[in-house]
Image 1 (tube, one colour):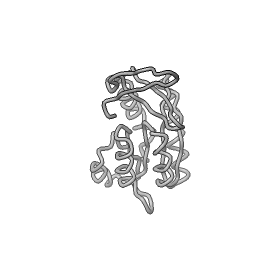
Image 2 (cartoon, rainbow, N blue to C red):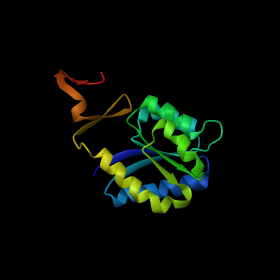
Image 3 (cartoon, one colour):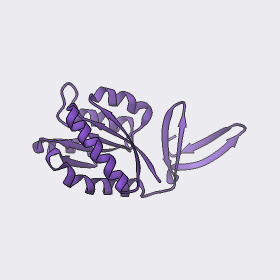
Image 4 (tube, rainbow, N blue to C red):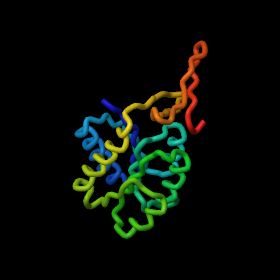
Amino acid sequence: MNKYFIAVCDDEELALAQISGVVKKEFARCGINAEITVFSEPKLLLELNRTSNFEVIFLDIDMPDLDGIETARIIKNQNPKSLIIFVTGKDELVYKSFEVHPFGFIRKLKLKEEISRIVEDIVRELTRNDYMLNFRIEGIHYKLFADEIIYIESKGNYIIIKAIDG
């Protein structure tokens, strides 16, 4: 069974619990073990994302201090491969969200109706290349697709992985 690292960020505690619960159920329905971490503040998400590299991030747009669009912009700089799905109660924000090229958009009022399609799309995207190497170095989680690896070399007790991006 595949395992994905997923973040859910919303400043409303009730919405946070509802979104994370529905997301967990949908991934389980697709046969995916989803490790979900929840955040009520975008700054905490950004801090942990530096070392965790979440594959999927469900993100509210309308939050105080740091909104979801600016948070997504920072996440894309940290890890361009993260799939960002905006979840919001304000439909008019969908157009503004296109600035950061999200993977998807879910309306909070239609969460249960729209989540299935999004999760199926996510699973399809993340399993497009099942040949990937998962590993941790000094507590940081990494995933490399096979087509990103140039070579792997063993030197004593160490493994050297040369990838396209360094």
